[in-house]
Structures are given as C-alpha cells and as structure tokens.
Length: 210
Image 1 (tube, one colour):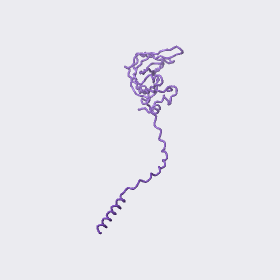
Image 2: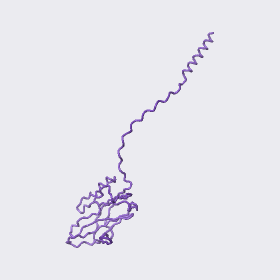
Image 3: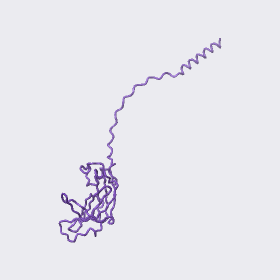
Image 4: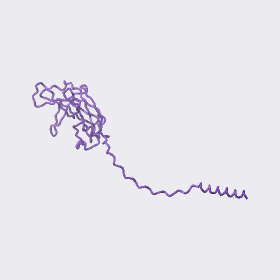
C-alpha cells in the first residue's frame, strides 16, 4: 500500500513538473509605433569643378619665336603686329572646350616692372615701356590642344623719344602664368557666373587649388 501511494505521488510530481516546464504560446505582436518626425535638411554641398581645370607655367625668352599678332580692323580686313609668340601644349583644351567653353589666362604682375608680384591679373595685359611712343602688351589665343602667348610693342599716338625697339631684338622677361579651362558650358562666354577679371573670385567660385 505504501509503495502504491509513493508511486502515485511520484507520477503526480512528474506531471506537475512537466506541465510547468512547457513554454507558453507567443503573445500577439504589438502595433507598430508611429514614425518619428523627419530630420532637418542637410547643408548644401559646395559646388564641384569637374569640368574646370587649372594650372601654372613659366615662360622664358628662349621659348618665344618671331610671329605676328593679327587683329581685325573692319569687315573683311585685318592687320598684324610683329610679336614674339610662345606655344604651350595643353591636352585639356579639347574640341568641346574650344567650341563650348572658355579659357582664362592670368599673369603674375612681375616685380621687374615695379608691380606687386603677388597679384594675378587677366590677359590681355599691358604696361608702359617707360619710354613714350609704345606700350608693352601681352595677349593670347588658343586652339585645340594649344595655348599661344604673344609679347609685343604697341605704338601709341605719342612721338617716341627713342625708336621703338624691333621685337626681334627684345629679350622677353620671365613671366609666370596661370590658366583656367572651363568646359562643357555653351553659355560660358556669354553669361559668366563670376567676374573672370578677378582671379581670386574665379578661384573661390570654382574651388581651385592655390
């Protein structure tokens, strides 16, 4: 009798333990919380310069050759001035740049002429020769893949105190130049987004390196 009662109690204990050890069913998923408010608008990023190239170069007297600076004097007519011309090869002057973009060229005003050599000024650039009768002028033009810089003496309406020197006898001083090539904008020449005569403004607008 005692063994039978002990067996019943053991079976009951196992049943209670088994029932208590079972994992209950998962509860229902609660409702999704409301979406939080949108974050503030991020700051506008700086304008890129993927279609703008810039660089520096220096020209010395030995890089110039005798040439002619031509200019239009009227419909169907032109004239030329004897000049020294240097050619700089620039692969970034592509056909697209030539047809749709623009090329800016700046010269560092040389101390040899009494100017501040830390200032960049746009071409064309001219300065008094310190002799009445002519001005020293530097100008440029460009073609696909090429930039041409001209150095010439431009006569004035003042009688010279000494003869205007032949350009073939002139030693061109060393000059530092900086170019900016702007491509892919068909309106680049017509509607400049910044004052192209101010290099600092151009540098800041296009985020160019110093």
